Length: 230
Image (cartoon, rainbow, N blue to C red; front, side, top):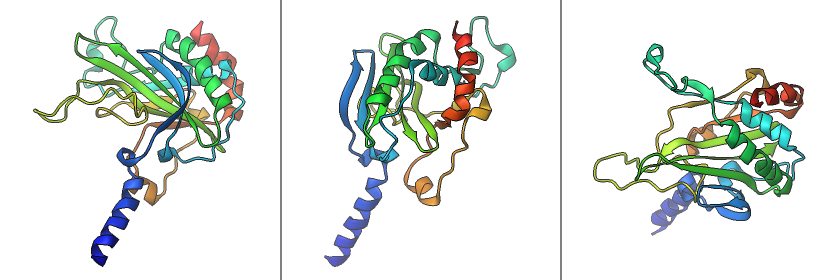
């Protein structure tokens, strides 16, 4: 019995480090409709004691979203069809930036140190398949952390035949609902801080797509990055 109790105790400790065991509590809704949301949540996978509320403007948030770049693996880049995206392309289109920037900035100005700002967008690809882009952000002492949990992830993804479809991602926007092969990058690349993870973070938490944008470096490039949107 004593051994069983010990096993249960350490099992609970391990579970607390896994995303599937974390309790995610939406606290404040900034915007919510059937296709998109921006809201504040408590998510222990990214910790607490963030520098919130954070003084960030809509223009600064536009610059952050405009600088986010997706690098997708592509075996035949030279045979890219007309109208197709390059394997390296912006993570957000101009209309998406216009929509999300003021809401995300408002979220960071509203958040408490325990909260993060999450975002979610779903588009209909076919009659039965939806595509999800979701993630979150918070202000740390080293800059603005941006986590991309899903980028155009299919809600119809099933890892093995006979297994049901994945969830739609609304309840856990930081958690991938399908394999994430694309790499998250930022332009200018000099405006991001290299991520450093200790042994226990790597063991207890899966790798996630995350960038850190220090605002002291970013502020000097805001006007140039906003010009790209116009």
